[in-house]
Image (cartoon, rainbow, N blue to C red; front, side, top):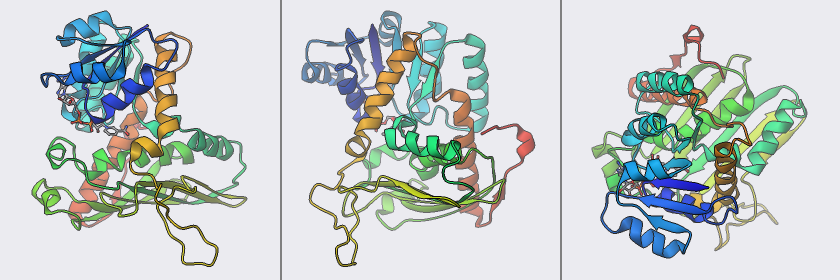
Length: 337
Ligand SMILES: NC(=O)c1ccc[n+]([C@@H]2O[C@H](COP(=O)([O-])OP(=O)(O)OC[C@H]3O[C@@H](n4cnc5c(N)ncnc54)[C@H](O)[C@@H]3O)[C@@H](O)[C@H]2O)c1
């Protein structure tokens, strides 16, 4: 099988490194418009990676295409894959706004071509186990969800203008994962944000720290916090409290958190430096699953339709942050969780 990668930047390079280890993948094709970038990535990956000079040639030659380009190019590239009837995995978010995403969902579903969205938490073994236990009723009634998602260091500041802002870019992962875990619609959103790390975020009309409160239809709440700088390392945790159990993912010896209690954990030198290390198992699982979907041996666990939920919530967060008031979500819009 041949997998093509459009965009060999931060995430495209990491996915490529995982793809070349999969026995089902014979060759990984790489395209990037920056001269020399695909060539040097291929050289670092070894004999199973080949640079390709033209994107249409890459799509044509591939059994599946990974779209790892800036967010504002995703929808157009997914459409090119659909036109060639090539399954795709597109990085998040798939479209800049909800109306653009709604049109794309219709096109994807009409085509019958599988398109996965790169929400890696869905492929993380610990998050999957948390969801299994929630669905099996092992936590009882869900009372509270707490999510922490902090980068260690801000992304390259040139990345910001095309990123869509902190809710569409960073918090969108937990805006996907938390409703997916709870399994109920969100009825109200409140969000707030500040610029505390770098004025460049304000210049990009963005914030670098944010908090979100989600209220679910059954009355449970989730509090999501996220930021662009954690001096101790990359920190992503999910904690769910129910009437029968209280569980966490992302809490281990590498969590960048120091307890002041006697015998409590202390952040060590090997705290997670970035999302690649923290979600290593998730990204490996994501590529393995993509290949199985391309081969027709697995269902799509992260379909484009599901990503309507997180993008709709991200847009509501942005409105709430700017207005300072909660945003109620109209369930008649037919966005099922
Ligand atoms: N799932 C995750 O954990 C995760 C993590 C980081 C980034 N992302 C997402 O991945 C996407 C890329 O982010 P990144 O950090 O790798 O960005 P990046 O800027 O490091 O890389 C993007 C690459 O795409 C190339 N590119 C630009 N236009 C292109 C086009 N039309 N066709 C092909 N290549 C093109 C650029 O030259 C660059 O090499 C973003 O949408 C981001 O939201 C997801």
